[in-house]
Image 1: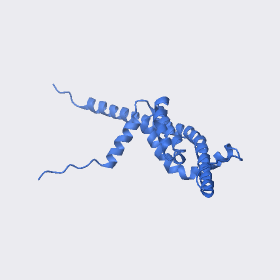
Image 2 (image 1 turned 180 degrees about the vertical axis):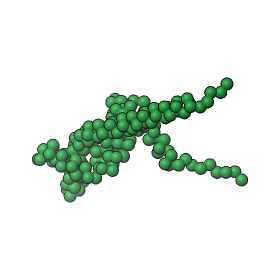
Image 3 (image 1 turned 30 degrees about the vertical axis):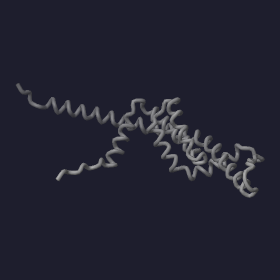
Image 4 (image 1 turned 90 degrees about the vertical axis):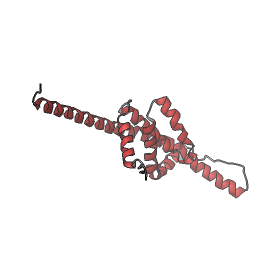
Length: 177
């Protein structure tokens, strides 16, 4: 009876992706920029019904960030979105004029009024989300960059220590002829 292949462990796969992200060729700034872009885009994705997600790809290309970092920033943004949505709504209300009205002449009057209200709330969330997303992106850029640099420097120190230990243990071995 043939042995069945085990599927790769999720923990191992996540560790591999983490290692690849930490060793990204562009360095810490490359990954941190991608993370910031993902975080900023997430702040106004919900009111656009998920279509803002597609902005990640051209922004990553134009600004030169990491796609993997952007996707991680997008997921972290999803985790913190609910509390930030209230702030987005408030900021959008501050920016948009108080007398702003949206009127869609569609269907019965009661339906049009509810639709107008939903569109106004979504517009506040979009405008506030764009502003707050840019602010959060800038705020998160520096800690993410610092953390990645710290991990890289620890990795470099470990490699240097391992090399020194190997050289000293090799020098202690008796010479063979």
